[in-house]
Image (cartoon, rainbow, N blue to C red):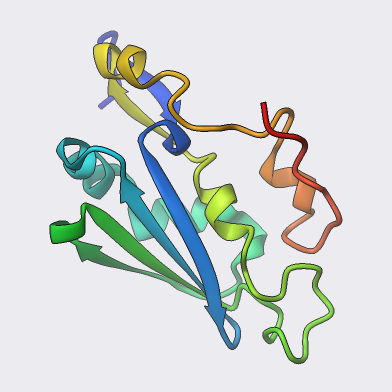
Length: 145
């Protein structure tokens, strides 16, 4: 979907997300604000793209599960928590920040949709995945606008 009629937007403008953990695996649910946008998410937010988005933060495989009746995708990020909450020295060993980080991923959408959803999501000022230094940093994520 890359032509003059499309624009790249962060997922935060199309969906909300929740995350948690089980052992060394982070679990991230991505839920479309509007069910009409679920097909865009399904098409572009693949396990491979999520793995690439997180880079070195996820050492294992990424699995994707579709929940079309909820307009949602669920991702399991294996090897993302340095062993998990009870043994890890990570600042976020429960994987709570992964939902916020996923919402920074960009996808291509029709220009008119990008205009319609602009500003829908709340983006922390100056926030970047790099602030977390492969998930092990101390970035505070900025402040809400």
